[in-house]
Image 1 (cartoon, rainbow, N blue to C red):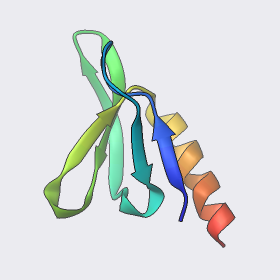
Image 2: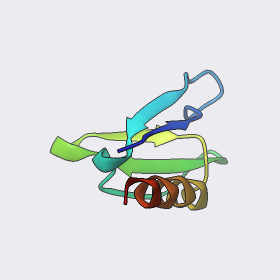
Image 3: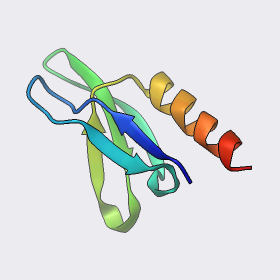
Length: 68
C-alpha cells in the first residue's frame, strides 16, 4: 500500500511518512489554536500531523483506491 506524506504537527515539526495500512483511526486536535490531526497507529502508538482530518481522509481514500 502507498506511503502517505504529511506536514508535521507544530511550527518546527519534520515531515511525517506513514504507510496507509497503518492508520487505524484519526480525529481533529486543537492545542492552543494549532489545529491538526491525531492519527492512531498499531500497538497503541499515535502521531499528530499538521493537516485537517478531511485531508487525511482524502489521502487515505486515494491510497485505498490505488491499491484495489
